[in-house]
Length: 156
Image (cartoon, rainbow, N blue to C red; front, side, top):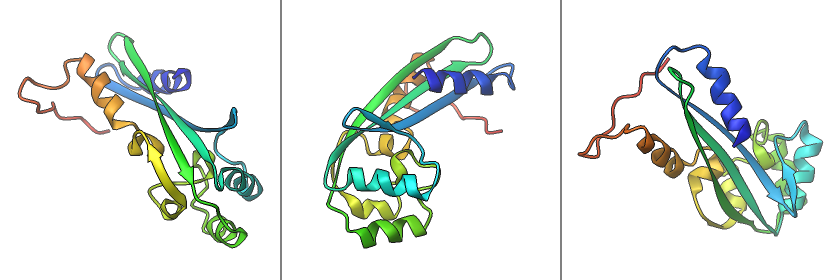
């Protein structure tokens, strides 16, 4: 959550008003934090660790009001169970480079979906943005009208 807050604060310096979103995701296995792998060797190590095991995905999320700096933060945790992966599967996945820039060296919405035996919690959290938490935080700003419609987001 601290990193998500720092990301939102850094982005908010470019705006005088509006809501700014910051998010950060890590994978945890056996009390070890697996962020984004530095290289293919790291990616292989991460995938071998996760193979046949259950790990947790944590995402911190912050919504910040650029006008006054007020912010709300939260997090989401999802348990993910990987099936046992063969060395061939790991090598093939690494060659495809989908692991690059991904916490835990995989993207559940891509080819790594085939590695997943099951999840408990938010699928969107594993993708890196827990939309359920985002909705809850935006609701604190009265972002949604009484009829359930949202006010349009201005994209920049």
